[in-house]
Image 1 (cartoon, rainbow, N blue to C red):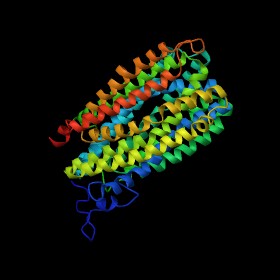
Image 2: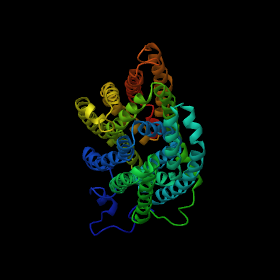
Image 3: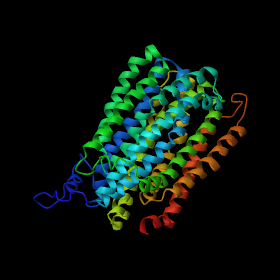
Length: 473
């Protein structure tokens, strides 16, 4: 059954087509001006991505100011491991988003409904697996990064509580991806803002009495709220999908296809996270001040990256919907519009980071050594945001077309083959009396170089056009 079948209005227009013209609700980007459609979809998504970043940033600011630099370093040490074990979420979310976008664009109600039902099943299964694996493996994984003992103890506590509540995180990250694949970026935004405000309030309430455990508890309670709201939203979208005992059963063919699409994205995230753990080991060897500075830089970097991730998601949804609808003629104008948006916002971000970097780092700590190291790190990374903007847009286009393997291999090369050896190599070459394990510039300069090279490779691959075979076959 197609969307809106037997449900046309008096003007003969399907309700979903009308919804695509409204700011709230699902966005059908298979018609109309590409630039306006992308902006209409991306603005709520961008705000939502900023709100998502507030989760970790609120924890870091409150922990750093109320407990101290050691606790701030512990939260940062836990980050790469959290990301490593979130790879299953990333894979499911990517595959579900691509299939949802393509079936939505094709107006295939039955397959879209079965995709959503299978995704809900996988969300529950993946959440349970990660809860058990994450809780019991946390001490081992933290130990592999050899942090200072006081930092490591706090990191284990924080990480184990996060994984006990991972089901809420799973529900939000995966189901919000389904909603965005169908063009609904407003509902996930609203749920995320509500959860973010709750997270900040609970942080302030819990951290004073419970320490770092309170920050973790505040996060998982808030994530349960956003995940539950996403599920409720899908259940209520009766004009777009049918959720019943038949569609909620996992569809073998769709699960295989979803996994095949999402696995490369999950593997990419796993590689990124594993390499981040290895580089974190180098950072840890430079002392608590450098660990805390790196945490602050990565939190600011997270906000600076949000527009880039937004354009990547918008590219995937736009291309997926239009390929599903057979509107290949709209791909070129859409890509050009997204590149203009990405480079424009990237330029603004570079200026903000260069002008206000010290002020931003000062939000996390009052320790002068940490502030100086963090400010220097941001200056290294600033211009890389323009490169990463281009990379995200073009790789998002490839994923929307169903080509998820090429971006994975680009990530493997830039992260494993290039960035890690560079970081350790530069550190070895800059050892001295002040920095016996290497200068902190090794961490940030190696990341910048990997971004520049990643952009160059992505542009070359995009121009060659082999990724189009997935879309045009």
